[in-house]
Image (cartoon, rainbow, N blue to C red; front, top):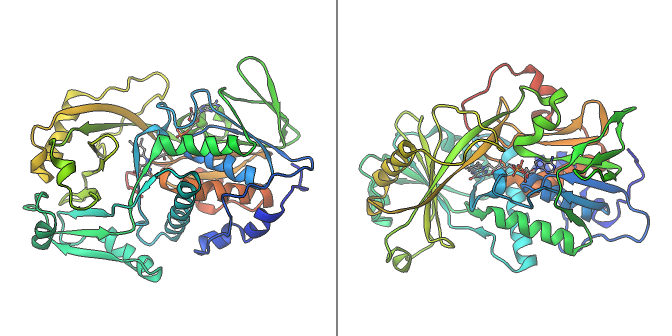
Length: 428
Ligand SMILES: Cc1cc2nc3c(=O)[nH]c(=O)nc-3n(C[C@H](O)[C@H](O)[C@H](O)COP(=O)(O)OP(=O)(O)OC[C@H]3O[C@@H](n4cnc5c(N)ncnc54)[C@H](O)[C@@H]3O)c2cc1C
């Protein structure tokens, strides 16, 4: 890979690299001013226009690359994990500073992007975590990082919660944690907007699936499109979500597990939206045993309650061929959990349900690293059910790593996958 990359304005500001990001410093990138150079630019092909690929293409473009983003089904498509209506964003990651800082940086970038394009992508509605347990350890552990960064996590006893939110059923609750910073993002829409920003600023988008070319002498020269066209580039980024291990079995076979995740959208009573006195917070529920986790969003665009619960039984999923239809028993269980917390949703009609997928690594940390045998190929993925919120900061970090050849963050390295024997059920 060429080391003589064009690194002017944007990159100068970014050379503090991943160490700085992970220490909590933000990078002074101005997302409005793309760095369009007249000199010969280095060329990058990014395969996959989910949240990781789109934002990486975006930052590579800003760093002065000639960028082509490819996806056979378009940005934020319904096959992709990033293809849903909404995704939660929160800083709550216990003591984990890496994710706290990635989420915090991403929040800034989401806000900047929505300002730049003049379209709402982020709803800072706050988040309520309903705890049936007297102590929810993870939230308690998260407090130190919140406080150190000037944020708060408020503990609201169940009786007080009932006064503040009379429509929440609190009988089985001990307390709730309120996080003012959190909220939700428009998912597919955000990916489409980022892809569109890329095109408007001189990047290209191709509706095509990309096949990795041969690796020779530690380098990939080209990738191949279905019609036989070859795309040459200095740098290739593969951010293919659930397809990543299929494209690079020699590196990732057995290292990623794609699992089935059903989602349900219920229709609230007609008068619900009109009677809302404040934006409805996103919510998570933690049961007494801290086992069954459910979460949801009131989506004002759909006027629908999105509801999901973590599957206790893991079911592997093929993103191309498996049906994306929820089972009746799953719909009933979702309804049971939803009505337990929101009595006013009793008998609410199901608007629709769908099945998406997580792409888990064994430790639920992401992958952002160079191909072990190929210096100009980067692999990104292993979203593990929590990557959407981090998309912008991951794209920025990927670009820093590509342009400076910085070592990967250990937790995101391919090397660490070799040391993991089994897939954790714990969530990040
Ligand atoms: C139900 C559900 C709820 C979730 N909730 C949250 C949440 O609340 N908050 C959160 O932060 N995260 C959440 N996540 C996780 C988050 O959505 C994912 O981690 C994230 O979207 C993964 O993004 P990605 O870019 O890695 O993969 P994807 O979004 O899957 O993108 C991969 C892209 O690669 C393309 N592709 C595949 N093969 C090729 C090829 N050969 N050439 C070119 N392109 C190709 C695909 O079409 C796809 O667009 C949730 C996930 C699910 C499924």
